[in-house]
Every structure is written in structure tokens, then in C-alpha cells.
Amino acid sequence: MTSDFSGNDGDEETEAPGRLEPIPAAVPVALLLGIMGSALLALAYGPLDYYSPLVYLNVILALGLGYAVSWMSVGLLRRLRLDSRGTGLILGFVSGFAAAWLAWPSYVWTLAEYDWGYYFSTLLNPSALLDVIGHLARNPVWRIGRSGRMASGHFPAMYYAIWIVEFLIISLLPPSRCFNFLENNRLCDACRRWLGETGDSAAFACPDDIAGFRTVLNAGDASVLETLGRFRAGDREEPGTWLLVKGYACPHCQHEDGYVRVFLQELKLNKKTKKLELSEKAWSGFIP
Image (cartoon, rainbow, N blue to C red; front, side, top):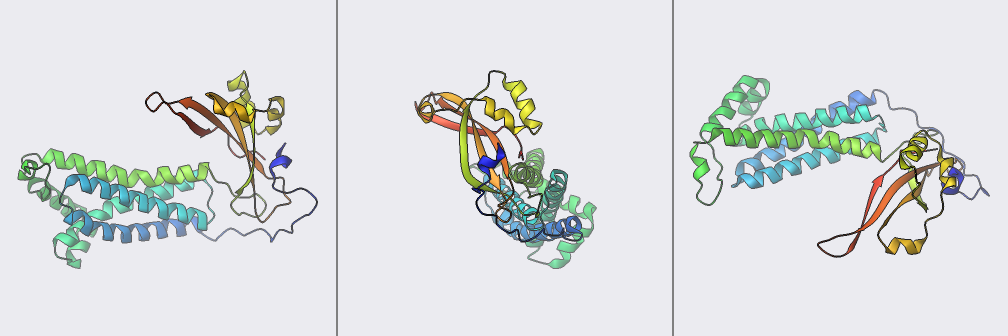
């Protein structure tokens, strides 16, 4: 079954360039680079956070920092060829937590007119940093609403709640993005390079026993797809559900059989817009 999606017609065999050897100490290197990158991003985030006049903009900035750390963490996974989900979660959490924590010394650094002494004193002394946070909660510099009423310091709990939300956004977004990347990408078993889509796909009708079929499929038996009937292209113009099989192969090992992955696609009518909308979700991992 998998040969139909290998991206190779079988007439020619492409010589593989050889297996890439694992990068020595790739995991510690990734963690170190993740912390260093997060420190730099947090340093740039601090002044933006300080000069933001509205708390709503601060939340948007927190999302921006979270996505920036996520992009960096996924880039490290890709460049260092790390495909373990556990490693991805650890790297994402360490990088995100580092960015969320280091954003505070960067904020104090800006508040102290870029005095590095204040930056390192709060960085190396968590109790001093907590004292600064408590002072800011009682004497806030933000404005919430047109009247600026909340800036009077009468609601410190509100500021703690906002800061907790920002901390969670920055620290939890990177591990979720890293996990999502590794869910949808795989290294070639032969040469340790990332697989790519071949562009080949085929649609099949959904089986009657969806649960049983999915169990067999996730066990790695792609031949079960041969028991399904093909889904006609014309059927995709009406609401319905079908399976779409996509082919994946390593661009450096094209003589290998490759992999397939199954997606569940659903076309349904949006009651508000009165238009058909297509949704897709992964239904299996990479099956050789």
C-alpha cells in the first residue's frame, strides 16, 4: 500500500547521501541554546512591556513572546534533528519558563533606566524580585479602562491575576507548539532527515466500524485501507466525511517505500454563513 505514495515510480533508484550521525549532546545543547535565546527575547520584551500604556496590549505582547520562543524552540528541534516528543516538551517548557521568568528582570532593568545592576540583582535574588513585583502591584503603572481607575492600586489582586495569565501564556505556549510540530513531522529511519509530503493523496469512504478500523490502522497496518471504497471527487461538493491518505517520503532516500498518514476530513454547512466549510484532523501517525 505504501509504495503508491513513495514519490518514486520504481524505474530509477536514487542514491542516498548516507545516514546523518546524531549530533553529540544534542539535548543539552538544545536546552542551553533555548535558555540563551529566551533570555535575549525576554530582554527585548521588557521595554515593550514597560512602555505599553494598556494592560490589554501587555497580554498581546505576552502572546508575541510566547510565539517567538515557540518558533525558536521548534527551530532547534528541526536543526538538531530531535524527534522525541518528551524532549520536545522539555525543551519547550524550559525555554518558555525561562522567558517568562527572565521577562521580569528585563522589566526591572527598564524601570531602573537600563541599570544592569538591578537586572542581575533581581535575576540572582528571587526574593528581591518578588518584593519588586509586590511593590508594582500596590503602585501600578498600567491603566485599565478610560478612567484609569484600576491604576490607583486598590486592586492588586487584579494585577497578580494578569501577571499569572501572562506567565502561563509565555511558559505553556512553547511546549504545546513543540509537541504539535513533532506530532506532524518525522525523521527518516534511514538517514535521519525530515520527511516531506510527496504530493500524492487518495480519498476513501469512511468505514462502518470507525473505532475498530482506527485501532488496526494505528497498529501500523496500512493495508486495511485497501478494504475501503474510493471516495468520489463529486461527493466533496456535498456535506460528508471521508478519509484522505497523504504520502510522505524522504527527499534524500527516494528509493525507500516512504510513509502514509491518514486524515479525517469533514465538509459541513456553517449555519451562520450558509457556506460549506472543510475541516481536517490527523487520524493516524506515520505508517510505513
